[in-house]
Length: 147
Image (cartoon, rainbow, N blue to C red; front, side):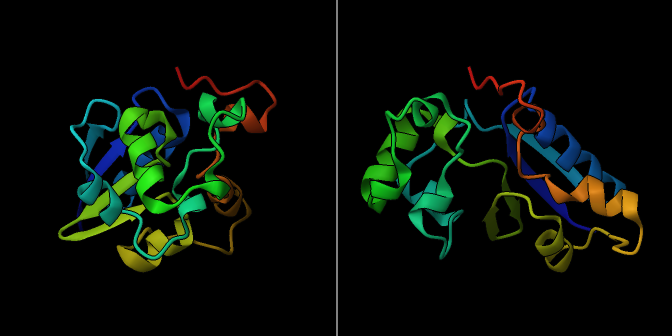
């Protein structure tokens, strides 16, 4: 099993569920605070790989919700500069296993990458894995606080 560096926003319900799934699959999860990490542009950029800039962002961040930041209009240098100023803009989690870096949590690609032992034939497992990249508070219309 893998050792996963898991950069999260402490208190995030989705991040908690994601860590539980990784641990249940036998992975060692080392949680790190995404918001207090000393990021620099080159290091942060490495997590995003070939993803388009608009997919680097946490759309629950207050600056995006109020329209102050519009990810679809940003180029790489500006996107990274904004994220370094306001880490709430960074899509979560950031994951590192060995030298490989990734962003977000789609249970199917995480399963292909390091293994999650997903049983796609069971309704409960499929349901619980469906929206692991979304804020459950937002999905429930309660509003997600990214303060």
